Image (cartoon, rainbow, N blue to C red):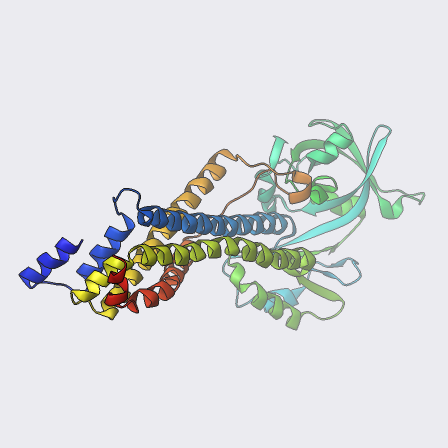
Length: 414
């Protein structure tokens, strides 16, 4: 290292940036037998890599969890529902909806639905269910969740949850009877027989054990709705416009009509997800912080070990600011290396989990049977930048110590 410096001086070609960068690499990758420098550099890089990978995986998992929950809820409930404040039937000719949505025609699908409680019976077994009558053309979302049979609402067919079918020992092709609960204790009961055409499985017990889908025409007959429906469901292609659309509908529709988007309906669930997100990120952020502390310790030990060499360099004319650049370069190299390695580890684990679903979770608790991971390039860039910035900041204190070393004091012990 000193021979390199002398050679540069001899050739009169010392470069302010190249020389500190060269020394930074030499300090980190020193091959000197028994040297602590190389081990300290490796330890600080790997410590930061572990912290970065843990933080990235935490972000990926939280994003994946929120996406899966949001997708499942919005598939069943749509993005906005319009219904009567007291759950009474409403008119099928609600023209104020059209005027509220006149500026949002693109990417909107509006359809009516009928949703009423009913009693499902098969032989001696019976269970209370929620029957939802929908239009055939709006039933495509169920296709993604079908596990048996097909999506056929013709000829008095129903599609119900797999968990409900298992509970009542039902299978595709069997016939069931639906009773309108509003007429259950009356002499003129409304009863209709259906054939099970398919079973769906969403992973959300609330839906899988209670929802039964039928054609809206059959629902109208079963519940005697006449020219009324339970409400309207709106599906939005661009969810960033959701709050604006909800506000527009609220301005046009008055009591007794009620407008509620899917986030408002499930406010407690999304509030819980938002609250639990920050403590988790804080805990795993501490792991990354430990990696930064390791950088301070490693660079401080390097300063102690290289005190003699620093003294020689200063006696040969190296300025204090050049020594600062050397150790700041070291922090930069550690930050880039640790951040890059941590990002690669996180991407590798995320890809393995997404492709092979290695980590499973109880579906009854988490609404899914495996941990979903959503890779975010923006998160990778942000965490990588933070790792570099904090690594450079961590190098400041060792840098100041190195620049304050006096040649006479350093060489006294050589």
